[in-house]
Image (cartoon, rainbow, N blue to C red):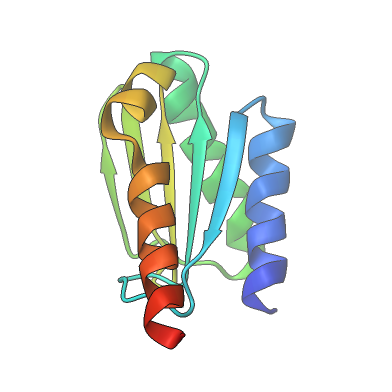
Length: 114
Protein backbone atom coordinates (compact mmCIF):
# COMPACT_ATOMS: atom_id res chain seq x y z
CA UNK A 1 0.00 0.00 0.00
CA UNK A 2 1.43 3.40 -0.98
CA UNK A 3 1.67 6.27 1.47
CA UNK A 4 -1.07 8.11 -0.44
CA UNK A 5 -3.40 5.10 -0.17
CA UNK A 6 -2.66 4.94 3.56
CA UNK A 7 -3.43 8.66 3.90
CA UNK A 8 -6.70 8.12 2.03
CA UNK A 9 -7.67 5.41 4.54
CA UNK A 10 -6.85 7.67 7.48
CA UNK A 11 -8.81 10.59 6.04
CA UNK A 12 -11.76 8.33 5.22
CA UNK A 13 -11.97 7.00 8.79
CA UNK A 14 -11.68 10.47 10.28
CA UNK A 15 -14.31 11.85 7.91
CA UNK A 16 -16.75 8.99 8.54
CA UNK A 17 -16.42 9.53 12.28
CA UNK A 18 -17.21 13.25 12.01
CA UNK A 19 -13.75 14.78 12.33
CA UNK A 20 -13.70 18.31 10.96
CA UNK A 21 -11.24 20.43 8.95
CA UNK A 22 -9.06 17.48 7.95
CA UNK A 23 -5.83 18.61 6.30
CA UNK A 24 -2.93 16.61 4.90
CA UNK A 25 0.56 18.03 4.50
CA UNK A 26 3.03 16.43 2.10
CA UNK A 27 6.47 16.91 3.64
CA UNK A 28 8.44 14.58 1.36
CA UNK A 29 10.88 17.31 0.42
CA UNK A 30 10.92 19.16 3.74
CA UNK A 31 13.34 18.57 6.57
CA UNK A 32 10.83 17.01 8.97
CA UNK A 33 10.45 13.80 10.96
CA UNK A 34 7.53 12.50 8.86
CA UNK A 35 6.64 12.39 5.17
CA UNK A 36 2.97 13.24 5.77
CA UNK A 37 1.08 14.98 8.56
CA UNK A 38 -2.68 14.72 9.03
CA UNK A 39 -4.44 17.29 11.21
CA UNK A 40 -8.10 17.02 12.18
CA UNK A 41 -10.45 18.73 14.58
CA UNK A 42 -12.51 16.76 17.06
CA UNK A 43 -15.89 17.98 18.24
CA UNK A 44 -15.09 17.75 21.95
CA UNK A 45 -12.86 16.06 24.49
CA UNK A 46 -14.44 12.59 24.28
CA UNK A 47 -14.55 12.76 20.48
CA UNK A 48 -10.75 13.20 20.43
CA UNK A 49 -10.25 9.86 22.15
CA UNK A 50 -12.99 8.16 20.13
CA UNK A 51 -11.44 9.24 16.82
CA UNK A 52 -8.11 7.78 17.86
CA UNK A 53 -9.75 4.48 18.83
CA UNK A 54 -11.57 4.35 15.47
CA UNK A 55 -8.27 4.91 13.69
CA UNK A 56 -6.57 2.09 15.60
CA UNK A 57 -9.45 -0.30 14.87
CA UNK A 58 -9.81 0.74 11.23
CA UNK A 59 -6.14 0.70 10.33
CA UNK A 60 -5.12 -2.49 12.14
CA UNK A 61 -6.53 -4.82 9.43
CA UNK A 62 -4.47 -2.86 6.89
CA UNK A 63 -1.30 -3.70 8.79
CA UNK A 64 -0.69 -0.23 10.22
CA UNK A 65 1.35 -0.11 13.41
CA UNK A 66 1.17 2.81 15.79
CA UNK A 67 4.74 3.30 16.98
CA UNK A 68 3.78 5.81 19.65
CA UNK A 69 0.89 7.99 20.73
CA UNK A 70 0.66 10.92 23.12
CA UNK A 71 -2.83 11.51 24.44
CA UNK A 72 -4.71 14.03 26.48
CA UNK A 73 -8.38 14.95 26.44
CA UNK A 74 -7.67 17.82 24.06
CA UNK A 75 -5.10 16.30 21.74
CA UNK A 76 -3.83 13.03 20.30
CA UNK A 77 -0.62 12.69 18.34
CA UNK A 78 -0.17 9.30 16.70
CA UNK A 79 3.10 8.22 15.09
CA UNK A 80 3.00 5.71 12.24
CA UNK A 81 6.66 6.28 11.41
CA UNK A 82 6.33 8.13 8.11
CA UNK A 83 2.92 9.61 9.01
CA UNK A 84 1.97 11.74 12.02
CA UNK A 85 -1.70 12.23 12.91
CA UNK A 86 -2.81 15.14 15.10
CA UNK A 87 -6.39 15.12 16.38
CA UNK A 88 -7.37 18.06 18.57
CA UNK A 89 -10.17 20.27 19.74
CA UNK A 90 -10.44 23.49 17.69
CA UNK A 91 -9.10 25.70 20.49
CA UNK A 92 -5.85 23.74 20.63
CA UNK A 93 -5.51 23.69 16.87
CA UNK A 94 -5.87 27.46 16.78
CA UNK A 95 -3.46 27.93 19.69
CA UNK A 96 -0.66 25.80 18.25
CA UNK A 97 -1.21 26.72 14.59
CA UNK A 98 0.50 23.62 13.19
CA UNK A 99 -0.72 24.48 9.68
CA UNK A 100 1.39 27.64 9.69
CA UNK A 101 4.47 25.79 10.89
CA UNK A 102 4.09 22.96 8.35
CA UNK A 103 3.28 25.34 5.48
CA UNK A 104 6.43 27.33 6.27
CA UNK A 105 8.50 24.13 6.19
CA UNK A 106 7.19 23.32 2.72
CA UNK A 107 7.72 26.89 1.47
CA UNK A 108 11.26 27.05 2.85
CA UNK A 109 12.14 23.81 1.10
CA UNK A 110 10.77 25.13 -2.19
CA UNK A 111 12.91 28.25 -1.83
CA UNK A 112 16.04 26.14 -1.27
CA UNK A 113 15.33 24.14 -4.42
CA UNK A 114 15.07 27.27 -6.57
